[in-house]
Length: 365
Length: 187
Image 1 (cartoon, each protein chain N blue to C red):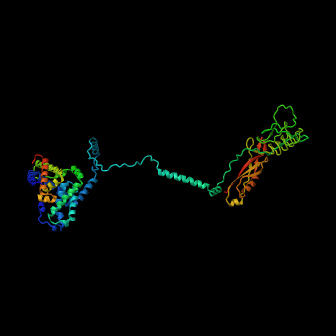
Image 2: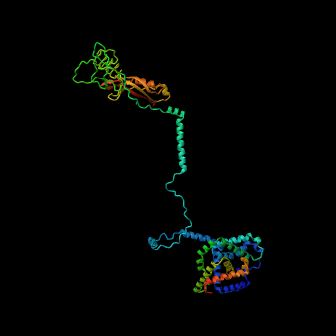
Image 3: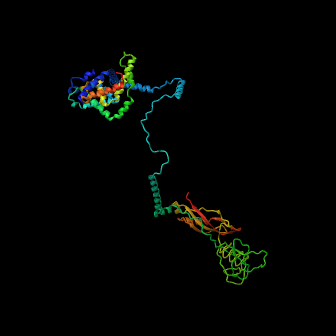
């Protein structure tokens, strides 16, 4: 620094200081006073702060307005505040809102959970298929489950049992000829030799055979017995009109309006099924089946399904087992069913053979 | 009284044997200087504490070249410079916010016997000086405060601020000019 300037400054600052003496002394006094004030509060009375704080907190604890103040004072203050609100210091916000993800709303599909779900479900499907396709499981399932045989829905096959016969007590046996058309109701029995050439009411002769039964076809213009070897027209030695050696308007050696051996229509002793003009046989008397010893020990239970033919007397004939249970229960079921009594199925007021399915259930109580 | 302490003619390592006594003796001055420089009671207290901590840590390096008071004031001046350098913006913001504590100024009555007019005038002058000092650069303010508040002479100020005497004079002159400009024609 330049000594001359330094000297000049030296004299200058003294002159300045002299000029400013009063404010500077005042300033000095103020600073010392201020500092000592602070020091007083801080050092020389250390208990002061604690007492001060206690008072401060007590003052804050006490309610601003006495609780027993009259109501109109508070009301008046509220009105004053509403008209001219007191200026409060600005709220100093030191915190800042942070942007976070929204917690309410529709969430997008989470890839991980989606993948987990897919994997779990495909695993479940795979396990299911593997279990079902495993031979042991299938065997076990067969042991557990009784596969239900569906209701008899095989194509309707008309029974070919039964039969009929007839004749007009001719001296010679019935001649060969074609069968009349089958019908479910016979109005006129067939005749090889027409005794009434000029009837008042002409109806084509028919035989009582269930429809769709294959009939033996004979190339002949006349009606007759298709199994006969004779060619001379004759109605046969039977009775009650018809053709053959039987009776009651049929063709053949049986009894009834059917064809062949047997009785009550049909061919060869036909068995009807309930429905289509054939009433179902009704149970009159029932015997509970006995349990076989083996089945009782094995606590075995189930249903045996039998197919039987209820004859015209209501008895059960020809029992056949459709669904077997084993352990001797099939035999017990047949034994019991044979004792049952039915009202036979009727067709046109006459009892006919009716086939029926009987479910015999074996239950352990 | 305190001015005589500054010029205590018995410097030396013996001063530091009783550090508690040293603190009791010099703490008011250091604190006053800090408070006048920083105008923040919390910072002033912290820096005063720091000052004595540093002095205690460096007490072996004290060779008695100056008095203990000068040495402590040197540490204080360095601390203030560091504080200003690190917290310049924060400091100025805080200074502008409570530039002058009106409660302190209101409580302060320079002389009980003076008339209210004189008290008002004195307050006005003090406020002007105060705000002028607040706007001074750090070195000028330190020199100004050391000279006119702590009543140190120029050589001591030069020792404390580690400046030459001429530099101290220059700083003083500029500081006084600023204060006088703030005070206006009143002198």
